Amino acid sequence: MRVTSTITFILIFFSSCEKNWFEIKPRNNENDILVGTTTTSKDPRLAILNTISVDSITNTSINVNSEIIYDGGSKVTQRGVCWGINPNPTITDNSTKNGSGSGSFISSITSLTPNTTYYVRVYATNSLGTAYGNQIKFTTSNITTLTTVGASNVTKNSAVSGGNITYDGGLTITQRGVCWGINPNPTITDNNTSNGSGSGSFTSSITSLTPNTTYYIRAYATNALGTAYGNQIKFTTTKPTTKLVGSNNCASLNGITSLYDGWNGTTAAWGLSNTGHSGPCWIAPDPNDFRTSSVAGSSYVQFNRNFSNQGYIEFWVNTYKPGSNNVIPVISVNGSALGNATMVDGRASSFYWMKVRSPIIQSGNNNIRISFGTNYAVIKVDEIEFYEY
Image 1 (cartoon, one colour):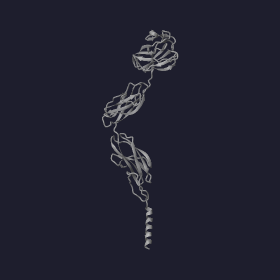
Image 2 (spheres, rainbow, N blue to C red; image 1 turned 30 degrees about the vertical axis):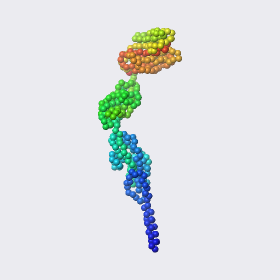
Image 3 (cartoon, rainbow, N blue to C red; image 1 turned 180 degrees about the horizontal axis):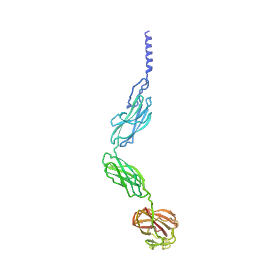
Image 4 (cartoon, helix red, strand yellow; image 1 turned 180 degrees about the vertical axis):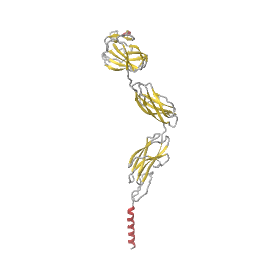
């Protein structure tokens, strides 16, 4: 009878414990924090999560990569990261809200203080409470930060820009301004302005630009550690309206100085021909029956012209040499070559007429020379026209 009572008691004990049985799982993360009341009806653990890494650190911001590995058997209703200047921050400190559910996510933290150490860790909240992941320590950077003001009041040869220095990197800004050029990412070794010192906003006036040209511009700020640059701005100067202000009369040689250097040093002045592009033209025939000189640049037409404003010249040219193209002449102003003239009309082949445009000629009284190579038997120039902006 005593044995029967003992067996009955054991059966009653196991029957009673069966309703309260639960499985205890080991922790996968030493930094997991359990918050809430442990129950006997299901797994008492909260979410399992991981603060993976931090990146994109600036003076005032950072990105944090995190993941919710396991939701604890109850859906994660809120997730994010929390941070502060003291270890083990919680959601009562600064925190982000990055949705719900498990999986990976990225949190962006802003409004931080430069050159400051922070602690950050991921959190996840479900019906049982809030769990925290491992902690990561980081320090914000300490560099000068600035932005470039967009170009305004853009004309054919000027523009207005500037910058705003929002942080001086902890050291006084001794020089600031903008730098610009026709190639991306200009530096202070290119064209630049000087607009004082210190942080804050400033305005820069940019001048001596070329019409209808694309420029790149960046604000800069210099302190004892070096020079920092703002974002790059691109703008294009306006294409000015030009007008025809005069022409050289090809019906006469008045005001024209010319020379053609033929074979064995034989020279001759240019003359007039009735077979121009349109009526008479200036012509430099070889005085020795189509043989040419070895003296480079010895054939030219030269004259004076007063430009009231910046401008250029256009003219027609025809050079004779079988199997060759028309030669594009070199244009010099006051003894200095301007650069490459360009073909703007006509045909490039020799024996045909081609229209040429000079580079920009500055205002003032200019002595202009149109020079040719000497390996062409006959050279013609017609209809020299003057344009100003």
